[in-house]
Image 1 (cartoon, rainbow, N blue to C red):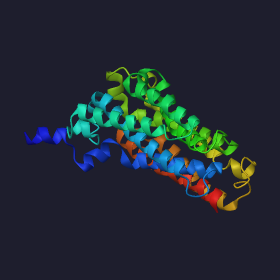
Image 2 (cartoon, helix red, strand yellow):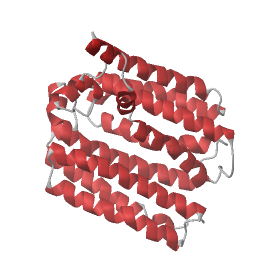
Image 3 (cartoon, one colour):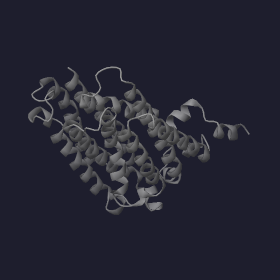
Image 4 (tube, rainbow, N blue to C red):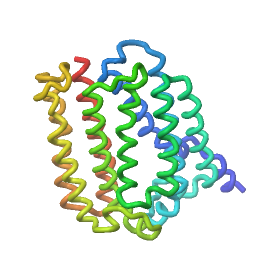
Length: 295
């Protein structure tokens, strides 16, 4: 009876792992980053606080729903970092938590500008269908997940007005490419479960080596794109800004080492390690852009 109650009423630690609270929080801060990059966020503006909450709820809901639909794949891949695989809570509980947060994100979006609200309301069904069934289609899984990285940047720019600045379009394109590389890379660790459940990824349809090479090529593209605002006047605040250039060299070199490690070792354990490392590199890149426009 005690184990059953544990499964139905998860503790705080289990809940935080289910909703990937750290990643969801970073997604929320990306809204503020977008506001600073666009120049729309200049002080205390309630719409950005509401947008921050909407994205956190949306991200937590997506993670929980995705874990529910992926519980068989995660079990086959021995992903014991997932609460459902460990049996820490019931599947229906995880699904209920996820749907609750998606509903909260939808309701909160009605407090935002029309363009921002529409963007959220149109994206929620896409993310749900991604978890439910769309991820089984070749490359569509990766493209939708990459969209999840970049749409927050566009969303943040829409909170104050409908104008999407050049630096926002550029940064959204970067986040899409790095998201695509990231998703193709982590699929290498999920080959057994994806193959068993009919999920068609580059790693499954070709090989882990092919997926690693494609992912590394995309990361190399990010290395070339990241410093471009220093050399080309995409945004006056970053153009010829030496502080920005010095800071962006940190993720530049980090991506270089990631590419080398990815091409040398592609075990599931190594890929999962690089997954955590890549998330930190993404954060460093975001901080470099933030510092560039603020300092």
